[in-house]
Image (tube, rainbow, N blue to C red; front, side, top):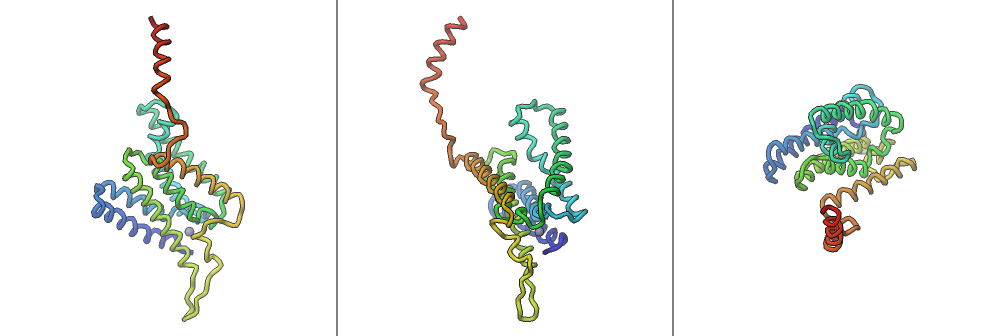
Length: 238
Ligand SMILES: [Zn+2]
């Protein structure tokens, strides 16, 4: 298993490349590139949220608790229909910070197993989809840039963990017990698998309809209804 320091270095470098690459080659603005690169770097540490090893994990929850509310607060306002004034936004940010920093951290500590489903390909897609859906932009390309960065960073973590499970003794290759526990599709335990895949399906559906690739099943027929209503309304109002 790669140590925290290795993950930080690798995902930091990767984030730098992702940010520079997307802004120089794909035409995103430097600010968009910088933010995407930073998300890549943070995502490169995300899978280890499931380990109980003290300080790095606490700091990781601290970063997540600071960043996630900034990205999500617009969505939460829209979903709940709360008023978009300064006080509401500030209170919401504080509540979300505390909920993630302590609530989510407690939940994850209590229910997760190290190298469980947090280290898996579906978890990688979930993290990218949450970013895509939560990122406050109307532009699909920018949302894809941010989600893509998270996927790249997350994958670098899984890959690094797998690389550390292979030992080279002279010419003999030895696989540690941890081999195959990072880049995987399913874990050993039933419940985490069910929860992970239910989440994956839901988010994939939400993302595809957000991107306009699938349409909701209830087509509206504006032609017929307003006509009949209009007649009734005018009768009542006048
Ligand atoms: Zn790991």
